[in-house]
Length: 331
Image 1 (cartoon, rainbow, N blue to C red):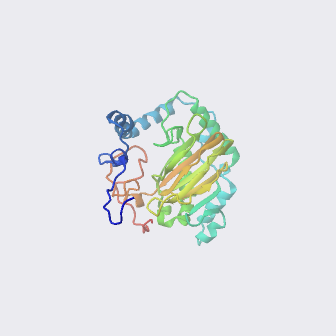
Image 2 (image 1 turned 60 degrees about the horizontal axis):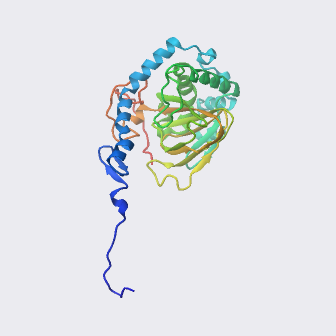
Image 3 (image 1 turned 30 degrees about the vertical axis):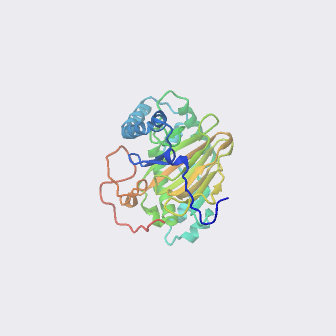
């Protein structure tokens, strides 16, 4: 037994030389088991950078090929968005939002508040027949031999709606006519009244494909996530804190999907998807962007954006100076 006052030799864990090594080149903490392992695990980062650099041009080429070669099974989906495709509750909430004197208190009576603290809301968006028709079209395209782009860097299965030609008839009017007035009341401090672009995609979860999604935040000021179908169990959304706020997932909030219903949240709200149990789950996700907000601060690097020209809506930044808007700091 050591005597009182005897000196002690302090030690360190061996993981100091193998775990959590910071690589400044990538801004990442990595694990090291040898040079070969390092190349295998982190070599794809350079491939990902090159993929992102080509993304806009390759996406435009796919869109052109699809437009010239694809034959829709539900051509009515490509007609301008009609009120008949939208749930009565959604139409009522959007209509109220455009009325003189409309306010947040009145709007909250027309939708479900999932979390007042996290500012997460839910309401029916599409009718069941429209969800079914859109799903049929998406599955028809999925089964074609035409090239398909990944929905985003985390999901491997799904469809980019602008490549399929559904941005102009479906998503743009959804944003401009319905979501913008609604979001202006719900999220005035996040640029809700200034939404001027979007990125829309459908993600698919199924056995043998993507089954869950890790915690992340969106490259968007605001997000709407609508379950389209099919029959499934599991796969709930979970929400943590805001990405610039307190610890993220101390007490995550889980939100179950319901076909036709949309979940509205801030893009910076950390979230993910629990593992799918059975069946298939298809969701329409629209990242809503306001250049008046993001031109000041890129939400991904938290710096003033260094702009690079891109195809279509790009990532929602603009070179021209937007109209002045008083946007509160997000915390």
